[in-house]
Image (cartoon, rainbow, N blue to C red):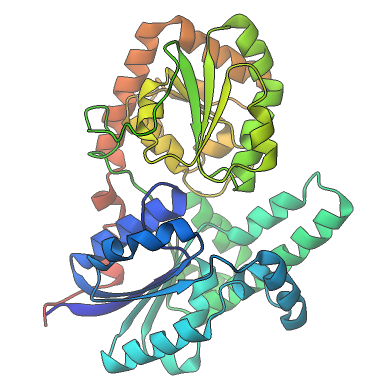
Length: 407
């Protein structure tokens, strides 16, 4: 019999097809080897309902709360009354709270672990004070809202500024109440330490992201239900396309880099690969040789087909899985310094971190014109990922955070 552990996350940890789902799936898989997992999570997309049994394979018991019909506008109105962050109010659930109370008491669970600050609310009550409570905050979410305030109209600044202030205060509350906070990079850890009282700095540590090097491999078997339709060279951007930072990244690229790039290389195709594209992203499909795929079963065929992957994020927090995954599949990545944050790179990849449209254009053109360089950078990227970014190595600190014994 294994030691029981409560694991809460804000979204179903399957399928591992985008940032937080990749992280929570691998956390679940890693922890399930040593613990009896009691998993509570939300389903915010009806598409994910089909995966309940897949998730249950890793768990002793599960609780899924369907909020796919819940709208942020309603949560926003409630947060105005409650004076709480919208992102916390959106995940309030009496049903999940009852389940947490019941399983912790019934199974005498001493280890409580949450991914994302929004779901830490379910074990902050004083009745859990004698438990070991740890939050994987991943990144300093409040600072992302501060970034959103920049260069926005006044009404947006007011909304984003309110969320920044309330969430920043809530993060400090969690730091005081819980036993530990982990963040995905050393940079995020140091930022949060600077924002927090020095007396709590020892509670803050790093828990890195990794990549499944067997899955993200050019030698793996892919699901070819969705795949590139072009025969010529292509570049691709992968990520959830209803996420504002990804939307901003591809719109910026389409407006400031793509026109010149497609003049220089008319046969080139740009694939924007990811679910729920916003109207802004859909509009980009009207440009010459730009394909917005929407949700795909498997992103790997698009990465495998691409000569170059791009990650032109101008707002980012934590480690970008899209970068690790492309590198694992032997691809060079032209990325901004924001997308590179928290990721150490091999020497051959470093020159392709660029921030201005002209520099991004030059970097992509250099790779398109030099196949040998593409192969060399891709090979070194793969070797680098295998050595430095496997999931088992990244999540090893959990063995110390939550020691386990067979009961």
